[in-house]
Amino acid sequence: MKYREERDTMGPVLVPEEVYWGPQTQRAVENFPVSGMRLPKPFNRALAMIKKYSADVNAELGLLTPALAEPITRAAQEVIDGKFDDQFVVDVFQTGSGTSSNMNMNEVIATRANEMISGKKAGKHPVHPNDHVNLGQSSNDVVPSAIHIAALDLIENDLILALSGLHTALMEKSKTFEEVKKIGRTHLQDAVPIFLGQEFSGYARQIELGITRVQSVKERLGELALGGTAVGTGLNTHPDFARRVISKISFEMQLPLRKAINHFEAQAAQDAAVETSGVLKTVAVSLTKIANDIRWLASGPRCGIGELSIPSLQPGSSIMPGKVNPVIPEVVLQTAAQVIGNDTAITIGGQGGHFELNTMLPVIAHNLLQSITLIASSARIFCEKCIRGILADRARCASSVEKSLALTTSLVPYIGYDKAAGIAKTAFETGRTVLEVAREEAILPDEELKRLLT
Image (tube, rainbow, N blue to C red; front, side, top):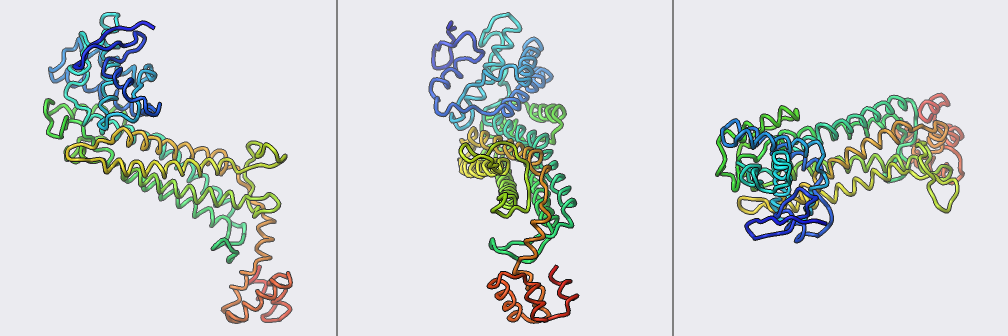
């Protein structure tokens, strides 16, 4: 492999010629080989969007010549388009401000811009990564801004759509099953009857509320720290810079973005990210409840509850022929567990705001964007590969209702709790149904019994 020598404030460093990053990124690669995990593409896309319109606005303000601004915006657009995805090599676990990732972006864009100008991968001339690509910015304001932009973009264009599709599918099943009577269950024990459609309406409402919760965080995520630079004071940036850049990004991405009301809050804390993660955790808990119910209701097929039939997607055992597992509900349960775990990391990350800066930004970015993606993906696959294909075993449902001892609850207003309990005990001990025992004891007219117990 061929190398080129570049210098930064810490001296010379050898950078592979095939790459576009520069000395600061190279030092990060050498010093932080912790996990092999990289910040996700939506983060890099959002950061590149900031760089693109920063160059554009700096040219409008007369702070950057068109000859330099134009190749910077073109190079940034290539990053947005995914052309240089393999060039973002800094580990998630790096400097807490995300400076290494910001410089990774600055160096890639500068090197590519210089290549456009001269045909050579020059790292600092004529386009300099700090003086030109990072003009009017600091890692301390662009990284929190990129987190908010990426999270809001994923929520608006992926998560809400996926949850809405799942909600629609659950509502459709609720209507399909509205006349399927089945036994209810509380404490994992037989309870009074319920309609399967009512059960599914509860699931649909959980997802509907989840969408409402997700929608509610968009307002806080829409506030960007951009313009605060190092500590929130806006040192070394034009007073109109942030407002103009945010306006352009908002227009292109069709997102409700605006300058932070208070830059000291926006950079010193990550409360909006913590709040968003809490909402995602709540949705994950909702999905856990729904997925668990469905796999239990579909358990069997002969020796379980078996009231539902879910799509068979693959053989379920390497040793037991004919076994089919509830793979999609289990996928949902595992992704929900990951999101709940991510929330703990984000919560601890939110506690990393000391004085004028939060220094756990990369781990917040990684976990928050992963959680949004996981919830969206699992909701989509749950809808398409499971919910839409669910069928009810109507005969099994009816049989369970007929055999249930909880039917005696309907008799309590007529014969009292103790006498109804006696009928339940007799039915249990003899193996007969509640209706059969009640008829034998002639506690009510037969027509009344049928109305109450069938």
